[in-house]
Length: 283
Image (cartoon, rainbow, N blue to C red; front, side, top):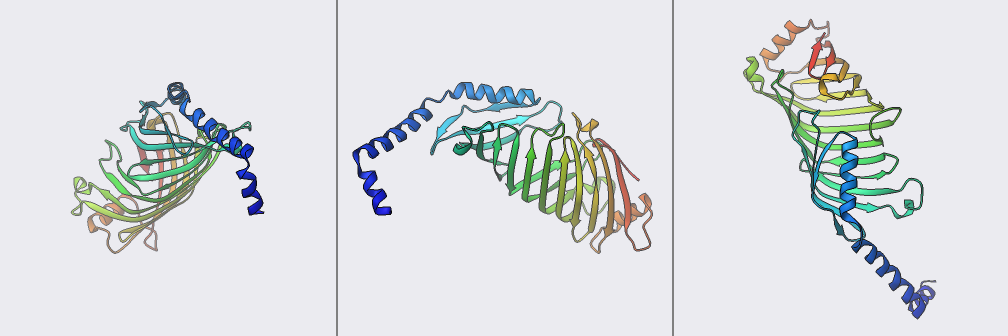
């Protein structure tokens, strides 16, 4: 069969057809209206109330489009713009004639890698790896949380609104909480260790199925909901937590925890976090 196929490809007509197809796709790529494409992407960002700055798209091979640098942010979120680099888009050719065409994509962010596929309907599947997280919790809680996102998965429909369904899984390591000396704790760093979180979302309501933190200082189990609002001040959290001190927990922190909440007979602390992301209360 392979010999027969090879003989057919040697036929002048077959070679002409193959050459025509190759040059057709090459010409299509070289003549893509890249400037209107970048304008269209910026318009989509504005519709989502996002601020976008991007380099001009370029043709990359085989049969794709690339953007070297892209910054994305929001005036409603007090956070510096997120820098994305080496963004590459490739069409999913088998979907182009359908009502829901899609692309595969890859990019770098926060020193890590993000890969996935996305469709016009908003369906997105993505995998994250190696992202370095370093975030300040806020002016009312001047602490910094850092760690590495070893693996993350997202499967759902964007944007997170209406009845759109989504699922997320996140696994992190080397999780640290820094800045505790401001509160009179001798050790400035609390080693939180590893984190795993599983979330199912309907629209802007995130149902946190399982939250697990395990380290030498403490273990934490939790579940609850997070209702995303247009700003952090209008995003509502309701979490039930079980905290268990471990041997490496700083004695000052352990005493502060006892003053904050009475432990159970087994030494665990049953806590509840409610309020907004900018004004969270512990009960």
